[in-house]
Image (cartoon, rainbow, N blue to C red; front, side, top):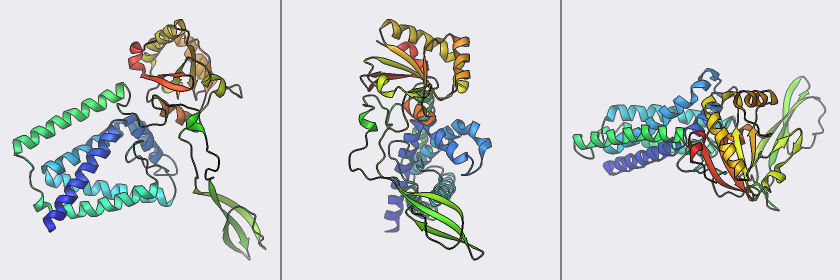
Length: 365
């Protein structure tokens, strides 16, 4: 009976770690953005790690995936079990902290493929912690799956594959696109809020000084009738209600909203760069060639960035990128194309093509 429980835990944990690691390895840039949230002020306050987020993202997801492999193969048992235990203890603490204090709304455990709320992620980690403890204290039941030569041969192949695949998606785009802006997406349809959809609910914590003591009175929004001195009110999201797949997206310029106009263009090419100062300088000659080709094919070509006008003018002067730039939310741009700069095409409000700047020469019109 004990052996059956251990083997179930072994298979469940191993497969889950491989799946979770591979999903994030498919989009390491996206996972690095999530790490930046955790490292940021107000969460872990480890801002010095933010510049290293991408390296850490790659290391974590490859290590996570390979731990699942070694567990299933039954090799390096001590290293594997200690690593699993330390990793799950850390992430259980992190997800509880995030959920309890409402710091990060999506843990990023399974990338964009399976979004989890902070509490769902915490409960998932608690289950994994129990299973990993079973494995940790019953290592004698974990036997090698194949011969030593075959086991380490399989591990070597998967080790090489993980580094090759990570390098591939970094220099191109995620192989599997689970985001709201994947090819074939109709943008206006995914921005709509259906009639009668649940609205967001908030709780208001009103703080008063009553007879020399601070007291908090909570309600759904109306100012409480209290005989005391008002200090402050804190707004807390209770239920976010219906959230469209695409939000905080648009084309803005000089205080005007051009979203409808741009989405009605029959052939629109967008050169996106969430932050021009962080964009790859070697990318812009390739981008300029694409712009010329697209304009010759009667595409309207525009830029989309969250950077200010000074950075745009510097780009135009240094690289000769003579296209009008529009503004939108930085997070939206990061989500559309995992490349800075990147390229995407909208035809009649539908995203039809996307490219990393490395693949600019592959664009077809």
